[in-house]
Length: 114
Length: 113
Image (tube, rainbow over all chains, first blue to last red; front, side, top):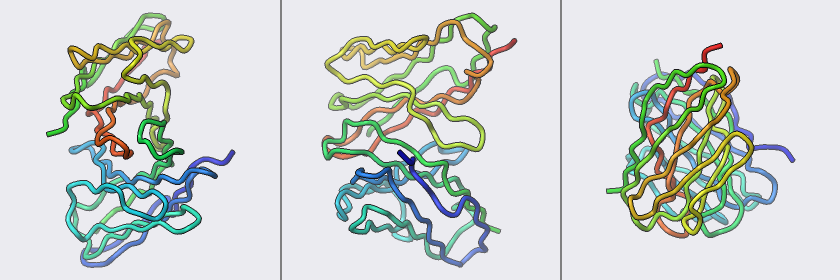
């Protein structure tokens, strides 16, 4: 079974631009979550989607948004990029709706803002 | 608010020795506690997990213990090997019914040959 796939792996943008990151979950998984990982703040929850609905959102500004498609693939968008948005963005998928199943992570998209 | 504290932040052990990483969570409603291993350039990989109705779980050289009363859970790695060197994260499930995990700050484990 293929794992969680994130594209692109690396991205360089400048301040003020916007970016879209993509995540393909493990086949059959309907939950997709996004996390931001930085050396200073660690792993922070951005949002979770289940069956195309956002179930939970972390404490990030409205510039961060996401969506999930009917095939469970998910995209995350960040608008008006700031230097502080430089981070590794991780996507994780899980089966089941209950929240107590293992989440499996992709290798992330490393976003650098110049 | 929801918080998971993880100690130590770095840990060096000799090959063959044991390593223990400890976490404390704040939300008494948390009922699922996974542990992840992250190697350089990779995403976190699930290595073991435990649910709140279980006190201990073991998988070969790795074990996890949970004390619900004290809100503590720990990762134990025995007979450490150089390939165990990585950053380890504990996590606690957040809001019931969703996959919002609260992560600890990570422990960098170095196994010295």
